[in-house]
Length: 251
Image (cartoon, rainbow, N blue to C red; front, side, top):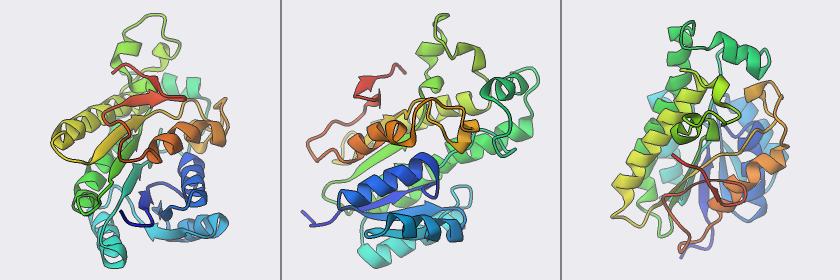
């Protein structure tokens, strides 16, 4: 087994992605700090220090994704860990409270352009990165994919009238996470005959730009399940959907 693990974390210049990259590097993983803006990625990598390298990747830009894959192949020949973390809740920079954003995002009034933009990042971006990085993951002897989703995307939970976040379920962010979960299930089924592990994780309601810092969990709290699953060894489970600590979320 290779002495070092090579990881790519998308959306790692801030928020949960940054914290995950920081903790993976601290655990001895060589981490590519994925960022749409290379300058922000370089600043984040500098903060993380040893083991972190910035890489430009815009999950909505196929050429950008392909260039990132080519660079990782040229520098390491493989990828051991892919953390698909990049995501957006809206296109307006996170202004407003979650309730205000939910009100503007109800099915009857949601902007179709806004919904498409959110889905482009949270759904199609996850699939595009998976497709580009899978050949590199196949070169690893211990490959794992961790897709960062959200419990608010759970259809089973939202079908329950007592689910506390049910009222904010809409076609934008929440439904995009449902679709990301579906994309992940498709990947799980495809990868069942292989040695590549794949897991789905919800960070919980973490205080980040995604929710205009209205979240109740710290970055460290929100990142811990992502990190725990990312650091699972070759004998660790695959096909799971969990929140901290290893609590199963219904699909």
